[in-house]
Length: 306
Image 1 (cartoon, rainbow, N blue to C red):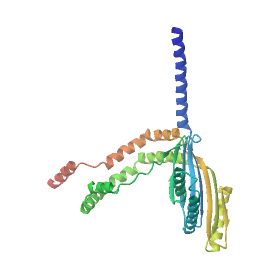
Image 2: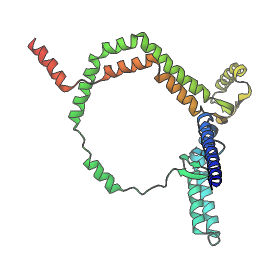
Image 3: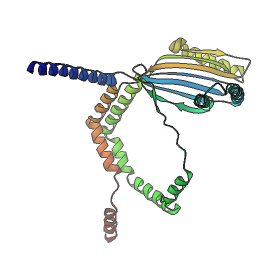
Image 4: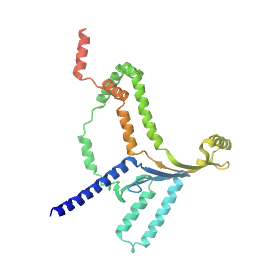
């Protein structure tokens, strides 16, 4: 009996150890694996189309997004395509179910509509954006009526008083900026921000542009500027001049990775634990703190008595 209990306990402990190891591995992946992104953009004849995605651990977290802005010609073409698709749907209405129709129509509306669209999927399950809820205009109007709003005179009075307080504190602000600790804290924060931004730089970048300005001479000047930049950018960006037509068409592709969660936490700790940053934050809070009304009244009475 005891041997059976020991065997059960042994295998239970091994199972718990395996579970803890998996949880630790997942935590390390969350900390040290960065998000990856890819973006494709194109513009022509006033139409702008951009799409991309943000992904983590393959497609464990996958967030596609798109932006569309059509000009007049692009909008007319989209309307014609929508009319043709509606006619085709009418002919195939008997073969398809009502649920498939609704899903297809909603997808086409998102593709053809101007603006920004996005989605967030976790293990293939869509979690964002949530389903749109009907707006209740009456409830919003009641909230607006219930929300207190001061008069225009009170707002002007508050603004004048606030500007007066800022003018009184102007010498203190200048002293705050002139201190050496403020400069060191600013450099520490900017260095951390730039390091995170540098980690987000695209690893793959490719662009093409067909450029034709109203004046051929201006197009030539643009080509001369591109020639000066060519030793630096190389084949990353390609410029095709058009001296006969006024045109600006192009496309761009970029992909890279964001900083990992561990890198962001490390930079945050470096900034928060820096003594200059802590002292600067304390001095800034003391400088921007509002004095109580009673203290202001006492000071005014003292001035009047004097």
